[in-house]
Image (cartoon, rainbow, N blue to C red):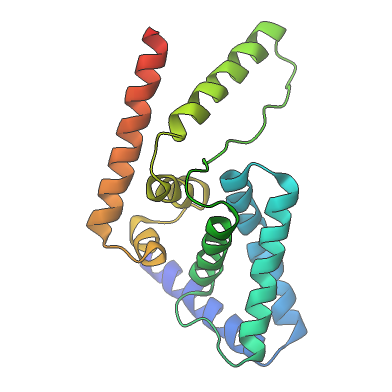
Length: 184
């Protein structure tokens, strides 16, 4: 596992070095490799396809601008891209906005099952609105972005312990609110 991680970091560093030279193949590879992840993250945070596409596109424009200015990412490329996406989401949605879930799409289940799923999603969205913006962010990075606790801590500029505590409180709050909804 550690060897794979080091190889991945070395590949990323090589790719970033080529991108700094404005190598079009490297830039295309970065876009192809990271756009789907950035888009999913932005979509999870905004719940709007068009806005998620705009945010993901802006992330890559900002990377290109940083490379043109000779100011490439100093951390991991993936971490830098998610950091920019995170800031763009925050800029777009000021405090008080929620971490929306994706819309429900029919998969051939009964109308009753679809209705129950929609009700559950509405309950989860209502529960998420009770989280702090930082708790919403940690859940998005950990569960949508697939970041480790350590990477999440770096992106959020917090300690690993703080991220663990944020995640624990967020999940615990969601569990409590959902239990109240179930008993209500």
